[in-house]
Length: 239
Length: 328
Figure 1: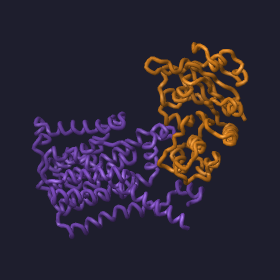
Figure 2: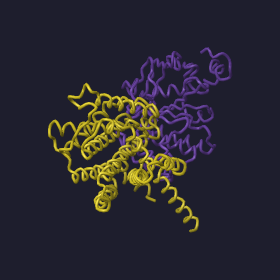
Figure 3: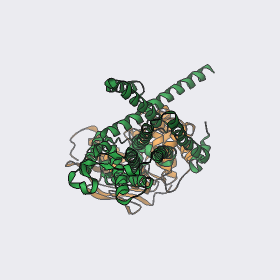
Figure 4: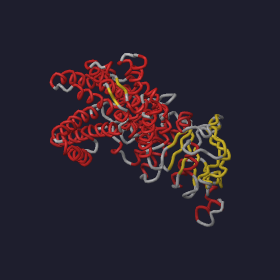
């Protein structure tokens, strides 16, 4: 696993909704094969950060670069094709398409087409290729989100609350899957509330509170940081 | 059920035989039916209108059935097509069949101009298209434009009328619209449109250029309506602006498409044939009860077959398959 090459660089990112700063001057850097946990209490701006980097929201200030290429404010499909993708907190499969067709939509828009069966095997959905979406469990739907992301040959994947609602066996399976992605050079930003799962998956964490980055470092250090403890265990939201 | 790796091969190369045969049959059936039908039922104009409505319902099918955008103002393209083709026939003596193609191009051009409407969604989009089409109607029927469009007095194409050719062109248009739907349904383009219909943001994260793909579908639908309006104007010979810019055209096309089942190849065609036949039968036999009976048919459709005849058919066949599987 290599962690030398800088992939994603977010500098002074600010996103404003009707005067409210949902993201306030956030900066972070992600390297090839790195897994970064993105944590923070509800409303801290985690999903806003994902949505802004992935092009759903336009940032008011700041820059986002992927391998030096400026992708700030680009349209979602340009960002996806450039190599940044995501999963969704509540999975968003194309409900009228089969599992295979869901992945095919991404695959036919990919610059470097990977075999769809290969992708389905990577996320343990090979046996469900012909299934309609309603036959999939919540865990399988989340893995389908991952499969669609993989079909675009991503460099970075935002994994949004993948672990929520999964059984311990499924959690282990997902953790192994994410480790495999990293070994193939994909960097991950894992948005997660389950600290046990994060510990298995990430090298470091970035903590958000009220739209601001308040900590960057190892999960162990984060858990002993006074400000992080105050944000998670209660107290004034003045960060 | 195909094996996983065979599925991949199908996407890569396409089972071209199947891809060609199925649309060919779907297009040939109405051609044969209309060709035979005119010998069994002498009202050729009614059959011409039925073919025109098949095309309109298929146009609605492409834009609504595959992208989820419902254009109440779809009649605007119909009117633009009727006027564009009529004017080039009258002013430049263009042959009618070529004028029909020009009508389709005019419909597509207006579609391109109205593209900003896609900033709207749901009911706002539907109403936006309605307002745009009413605006076009107001411009074309304006007395101050009489020197160009003949204003409120419409166009007289009687000099170009040729019943057999107009009828043949209407059938060809119906077949073409079915072929267009078949192409959309069986292609990667169609797969992409269905993804957009399900969730446009998810589709964009799948690398889909959503505005561009939706634009293509919109252009195809607009061109079909433009050609349909052209054939209507030509086969009607004399028409007024309110006849070709009639919101009822949109309503009927939408109802026909929904009745048959949107997102399918056969649905809008069967829906048009059944409902247009009922529409005319009631209109002739019991005109006093026309709206009551027709309204009841639509209410029953919404209550018992919300996904149209095609959805109902799928429901029945799935039930039969399930029962058979249980018995085995």
